[in-house]
Amino acid sequence: MKNLEPRQEKVLNRFKNSPKFKILFICSGNIIRSPYAHLLFCHKIKNDKGLSKKLIIDSGAVKFHNSEISDETYNQLLREGVSKEKILLFRPKYLGDYPEILEDSDLLLVMEKNHLKYIPLTKIDQSFLFLKFTHGLEKDIPDPFFNPPYERAYKMINLGLQNLYEFFKGK
Image 1 (tube, one colour):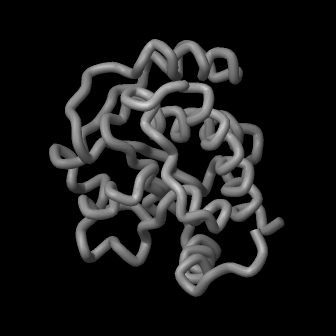
Image 2: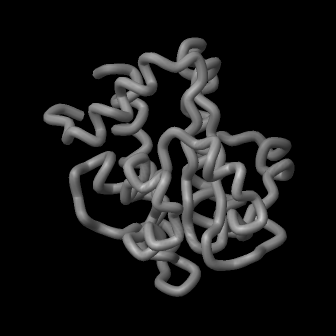
C-alpha cells in the first residue's frame, strides 16, 4: 500500500507508536462479512509473532442483533483453514450493546459507506470504508445475505486482508 492518504499515515503512526493496536471490522449483522474478516485476519497473522502480539482484532454489527455466524461463513472459514473451535467460540455483537468496543478501537473498517453513519464522531477519523483503506476504492462489499453470491464478498474481503497485512508489515 503505497501513497497513503494523511488519515492512513496517522493510523500507521499510531500503530507504530502503540504497544497494542485494535482493529474493528464492522458490518450490518456481524454474521457474514465482519466475522469473516475478523476470524480470517486472525488466522492470517497467527504465525507472525510481531503482528499477532500487537494486533487485537474484533468485529461487530451496527444494524442487526444476531446470535450466530451464518452457515455459509462458517463453512467458508473452515475451507480457509480457520479452526472449528475458533469459529464456534465466535459470538456476533451488536455494537449498540458494546459501546466500549468502538471506543477501544484504533482502526474501524466498515463494509459499506452507510455503516459510517453509525460511528461516533469521536472515532470518525479512525474509520474507513474497508476497500477504500485497503485498495483506495470507494466501493462497498455487498451484503451477501441480501445480495448473493457469498463468494463475491469473501473474495473481496480476502483481497483486502492481504493489503491490510502488507500495510501493517510495512511492505
